[in-house]
Amino acid sequence: MIKVKWSENEVVLLLDLFYRLNGKAISLDLPEVIELSARLNRLADKEKIIKDEKFRNPVGIPMKLQNIRYVITDGQEGLSGASQLDYQVCKKYENRLDELFQHVKKKTDSLT
Image (tube, rainbow, N blue to C red; front, side, top):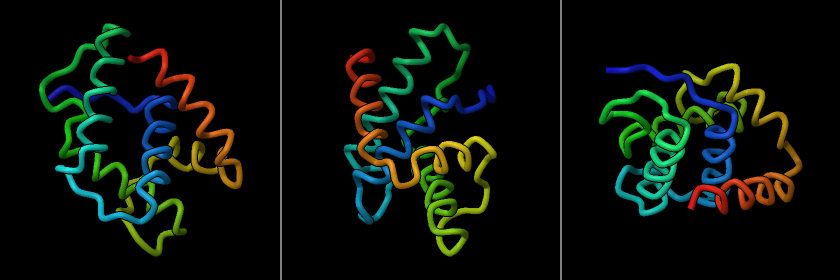
């Protein structure tokens, strides 16, 4: 398995999905999870990142979303494996969701 650290742009896309799911149960078969996985893989291909079949797959996306949930809920819910970058991105967009959504729209347009 090839380990690739999450980038700030990837965590921003995760945070966006977390808020768009609005409390919906997070599972690997959600269309939004599958689409984000595909989008992150396209981004990695565009950036020529060396990866394997497990890279940002639909199994890993819900786990990373649970790390985001942990940060957002101050450790009350989710998985405690959040990275320093997860904390930084969540803090950056805390109370600035409009800015988050605008940022993601620009990034999404460039990935399609």
